Image (cartoon, rainbow, N blue to C red; front, side, top):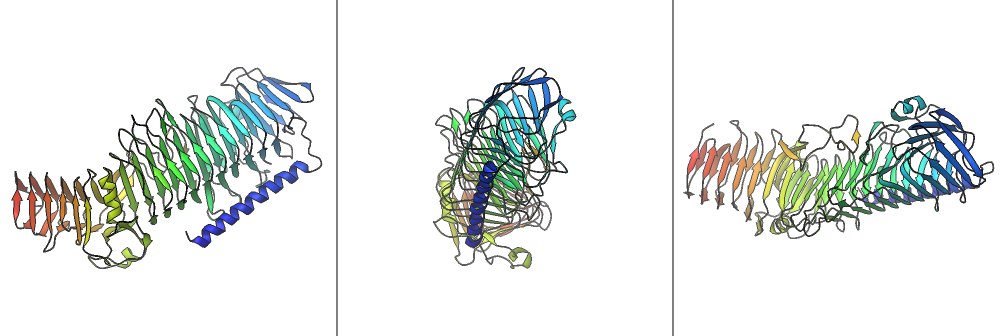
Length: 612
């Protein structure tokens, strides 16, 4: 994203924020709006009554497990209290506002159970407002009372609903242990404090939403239809806290209606505690996802938690922002994935951390179109780092990667298919630093891995225990699902697969090449290169175990040059036809699954070849 575009987006957000605050202030001062507590009630499901002991208190008594009330107005002035007395913490009260005014909560709302507040004209919690509930949903979408009473919690846009209703919190909302707070609208914003420890905090933007109240503190939901509003998305500039639980910011908007679908500028915290991992999800469909604040899933006497950021467009990890999922000294680092289908911008002063006293965690940074990497992830020994752009070009250097730029390859022609986009340039020094600290590095390119011709031969030297893997392929979920969704028990997105299990597997594609004829690799860990039915051109390799897999077809070759060879202290396994490799030197076994053409073999144990 260009500096001009970034600046314009920032200006747009500032103007939009000022406009929202002005509109809210004008609405609060507008004549005809009375904040004398909820009024005009009709019980339309279950059993309940409403008592008003004085002008400042409204007490709503619920006698059935579920109850539904239609209100003409539902607002709470600064000195007013609305109290829900419900049978138990699992009881739910549906409150539908059918009048023409938005709901403004300036005062206090209390409940020992769960409360839904639906108003298509908007729900606004001002600074100083406080809510103390077991579970809470505020939305501009509607819910059929009969469906609600039957246990179907599907929210849809009413035909008569305006497209300008928003859900905005500048107050303090607290759910009980294992509870939830869900704010859902065309545009949803938090500048206050929302807490649901061991539960779920969610900011949601969409046109149709289905909730599943689990009872274990996690709320599952599916956004079934994108919002069509021109003011769509979710934004956090306050604090979202769910230690031992999950925080979700997700938006599904129609394409081209908004530049940024999900934007975090504040604190999002979901610490792992004891046996419950904290999870943070920022997921955008139809718009960009940006973090310029703090995403904190560190472990408290536990492993680091999980942080997932996904956009079917672009992701920006801004300067000075933080994404941390570190374990303490007796635990391991967490799991982080940053995946953009178009462009990912990982800026230089941005912190990605998944360290741990026992072992580092897993970090994936993927821009399936283009990838700009200026930062250096912190993982520590035992950590695993995956870099996944379309094209990777390696260049000499000790600094951080240079990001995306035009290139031409050393080996083979620069075809239109390869050179139509920009490569992600990684410096050998940057990779060596990770390997030297004991981090396993995997380079996955859906198109090609090659060298920048400006500086050759390219040397990659590392003395640490980290393994280096180069793969042509795509990342897929272990259960075979496609696309990107949120996990069962958390949230799911319609028509998207679910991510389950541990780190992603790599599934190779046919036709991709690994072109490293000018690269000299000397590492203490293991080296592997995988290109299903492609060509692998190698330079000098010195490592522990070496595994090179070019596929099983006759056209799959492992190609060397006059100076080219492999030296390993462990085993060497090659799949494919070995062509013109000048020497092998190994202290253990060499296995070649294909035709072999080479010289100067120094094998410590056995040599086995199998012609394809």
